[in-house]
Length: 435
Image (cartoon, rainbow, N blue to C red):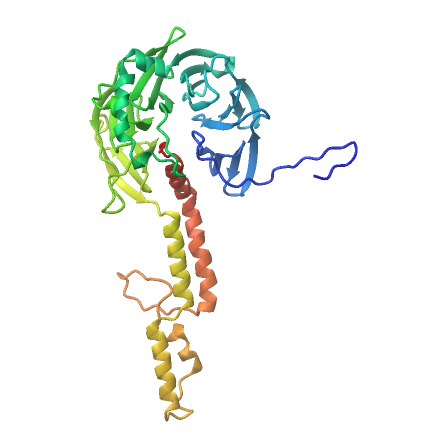
């Protein structure tokens, strides 16, 4: 880089491309039309309307970002950084300034792998990684944890660690990494705080779905959920749908209701997108006003609602198949081909008309040259498909005029819908289990 004597120069970020899907909570809405996601060692706040970006950078000695969390009121952002001395930055999103930096001496790991705010934004639950897997509970304004416990040690005390050895039967092709490397699931995959009771924490992962309550400086383990297959299940994610009701999903495709800390029943999973595929695995769960929304590994978003209110009977009321990138490209190529290539019927009709005119018709009887255009013939293929229920004759306009407009209008419609669909689709693909 060019540098003048006595002065220094540095690069200023203008726009960041890409994303790090291995960061916990890698996609969050900060405000209306604004997304937060990690790119390298930078957290990007991207405004979709203006296409502008703001940045929060990790520390110089950080090894990279490991987890993100946003408070319910969108005011506070937690950014976890790995390294020899892992730390968490608490950012105030309004003035865009750092409020606190949280760190502990006895983390027992080089990273925080999961974290979540309480509804009021005052408390924070953070899960440390290997080898000790310590769970911390913070009032982050005090900069010190209120309590901690080792999730792995709690499982060993309860005798569940031995049963998890049976989980090896689940290590099939679905436990492969995207690049082909084999890796086992992590002991902890998701951490949340109860929306009604900020002292109650839920932790899910390999062979466990556990609840902890903060009491007098201690995180007390709550009784087991009484699910017979808990020890051999890999819980991928969970969410609170009410103050005492949790929906959790497993890698083998189960979707279950846990109420009051006790397993209640299994729920129907989103249907497979193709007949030959097995039942989808739910990778992402988001609470909604009347139930919750589930995103599967087959690119399907299912909306669940509770019709009876308090019984916990949820059913799928709507399913949205999110198109894959390959399907979008295929449709785009098909549309481009339809607009540029005349149909076989059109070409044959044109040749027949020319032959007839050349074989004996007078110049006066010759058809108008415009009638020989492919888009003006009877056998030409329409550029736009009209609702078959409307009996109305449609005359297509010339291709030279309609093609730029149709392309712009079509992609504009997708981009308007894409603000939601793009977010949902990437939530599904980025929140993958360890395979």
